[in-house]
Amino acid sequence: MSRYILTVSCISRRGIVAAIASYLADKGCNITDSAQFDDDNTGRFFMRVVFHSEDGVGLDAIEAGFAPIAEQFGMTHAFHDTAQRMKVVLMVSRFGHCLNDLLYRWKIGALPIDIVAVISNHLDYQKVVVNHDLPFHHVPVTKANKPQAEGRIMEIVEDTGAELIVLARYMQVLSDAMCQKMSGRIINIHHSFLPSFKGANPYKQAFERGVKLIGATAHYVTADLDEGPIIEQDVARITHAQSAADYVSIGRDVEAQVLARGIHAHIQHRTFLNGDRTVVFPPSPGAHASERMG
Image (cartoon, rainbow, N blue to C red; front, side, top):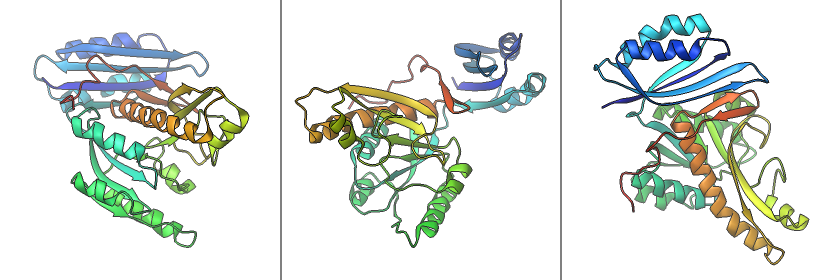
């Protein structure tokens, strides 16, 4: 049985939930999971509904009939078929822990995406990617060719129909133009518990300050370096006995987990941009089940 997802955001007012629930019931649909949030600060309403059709009504028909409700409440909304996997481009430089983690999760079905390309400005992980039967694109970046390199990256994104770019420790700053064009569709992993220790060598900065917690942040990319809306964060506890190298090693594990969770939230349409912040709903029951265990 096909499962569908409806995402909605609009100005908060009475009757939104009732209108959505009544419409889906009238169409012969059964809601299996629902989450909603009213932001008192912005006055906006956010909702995610998972449902299936018990009468065999197709998604196109369900979506077409919803238009009057969306217009009535001024909704930004989208319907999604959970059987259709999101097309994703991964980008990496010379730190491969996040890439390897994502490839493994993808391989066992724990991260249900279609990886349509892996792009790197180095050749370090070409063999790893090719061995997974995935297309690898080497796009070197220098100060002289940066605009041309970014143009090539966008060509790959457009040619593959990619809906999401994941910066899996891709160590190049993207242009303002690319950030704006792909707004809400680029996720980065920053090896720091933002907003602390921005920029280069955050683990060294953390070590020098003697912090007791280090962490990682998955966020949407904007023109402001490392300041995009935060999707997911986590931390690991550190003691005075750890070295700067220990910080890096421990941090790698946190980075991989946080990035995977951030991607998981995005591809399941659980994230909503809310100004400089995000609304991130919890996963639906069964959302973390993988096709095979190992």
